[in-house]
Length: 328
Image (cartoon, rainbow, N blue to C red; front, side, top):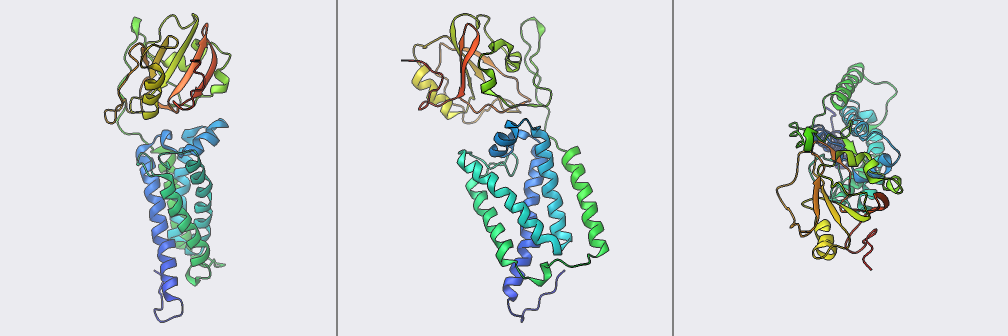
């Protein structure tokens, strides 16, 4: 424990900087890491990371596990190695800020910093910016946080052991709660499965010009009609608690359908929601669904327009911006 002389100049600043650097910020990071371990689902990663790294084809489960490991390692360094605490804290907080700014720009409802616990990204952005500036300015020049030429052996060993345990926790012990219920059987006894790596990130540009039934996502949809290859049709992906999906249906699909439409319900990993369910107003829609137990990175509503079974348009849409919807 660092001894602070209460009569020395800047004692309040010194004590505040040490408490923030050695206790508050590590606790903040540790809570986020533990909640992500408990959740264990890439679906709750920051939306900006999903868009940027997923778009480059990175394994999102690896991204999740790496982020947990990094946070836990930084927690250990900030606690056991006070001479490095300010530096690693600045690097960690600084790496969070662009991601949080991206989340805010994307209009995300949650920052993804605390697993399944929903925290608005602007709240985390303000908090992390405060921590970042505190480390840069408030903790600057504090003797107890200055880097030294020699580090105590026991502190180095403690930080190293903590880091090993952290990596083991992040890459070996993440879990996602109870196992999901098996998917319902399709006609003929066939059971819809899902992607082997446990999540699906769509590439709508790659869908276009391809037969819908040739897409991997089509293999996992339960209840697709047999006539999708005939004429012009829509496939509409929605979530049962999605307000934007309900708005789109109310405006364009509540009465007479512009084209034959198949509505595909998209669940969360642990199943379909029971709270906040929106009215389903597309009475003429044919119904299908994707299986649970998978993180479906489909930002619903998603509308797909087919011409003789070939995708001619696929996009995330809203009632105000109905891409792919030709109703005029």
